[in-house]
Image (cartoon, rainbow, N blue to C red; front, side, top):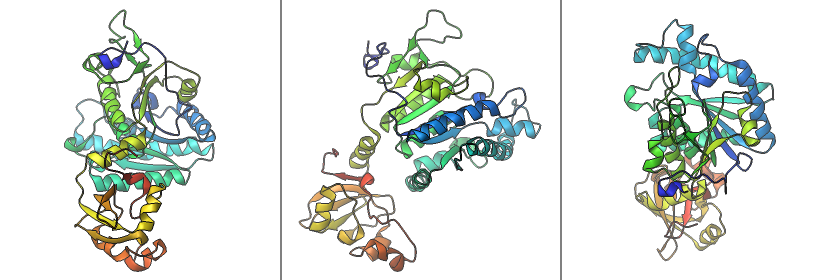
Length: 389
């Protein structure tokens, strides 16, 4: 049976797995992390998850965490209840709870000598291109430096109109931003069922989904009461974002200790498998989904370097055209004015004009600040006209 035909896949053939992923985003909901009765972080559960994360890192995997829980922790500290809470009350709870939440992650992961960093994002940060690029650059640098980013929605400043409202979709955007190859949604259920297992009989677990069809969406159920703001509807919305980014996704039961270890040992999950790898999906987006804002003309040496899979350096650029901004898509032309590539440029047109033809080591002297060594990084560059790379 095929999800592509509107039905779930029942076979475990070609099933993905945790062990094969190199960069993993793990989303943790409030219901797992925070005890509803006390409003306190479940430290024993978090310590067990930290053990799993340390195991993943020892296996050479990079981990990013998208965590709910700040409002749930903060409202108890401020004496607020979950009912009839105004936006400003939620924001106050988030501001209070985020500190306690960050300390909990720091202390749990410090047991393994792992550095934790905190990043707060809004919807606009993941959708506006330049904010997206800034956040992407920060995440990339943190991972290179060996830190584990802990990400949450910036509830203290976001209004209802610019909020995600759930961290499933935020986690998918983070996975897209970080070019992750796996998104794990830790939930209170072990995946997607053909109906709601809490209220319906004879429902079946769906182990693998290869396309989000109308029939698959019809299987989604609303969130359970309590701290949770998501549910299967938002998880399928996250799967759509992950698919577009070429990122696999898994929904698994995170209520027990060591949920990632359980996944590695074959615990039951629902896997969402995309057609393309993250980098391929990103490059197709660059090639086909953006109107170029300008162009760069390069010399023969730079063209040869690009053909070998290298980044485009300022020294190889001989001229430019257009009033482009940092992060805009530009056309790359050879000495005969033929389009040979497209990419996301790391400098605006004014700064680019000052550094073309010069070595990367001269950038700081010419601009007064240290920018990227590359005019276009190879991960942001697509050779050819058809988007294939």
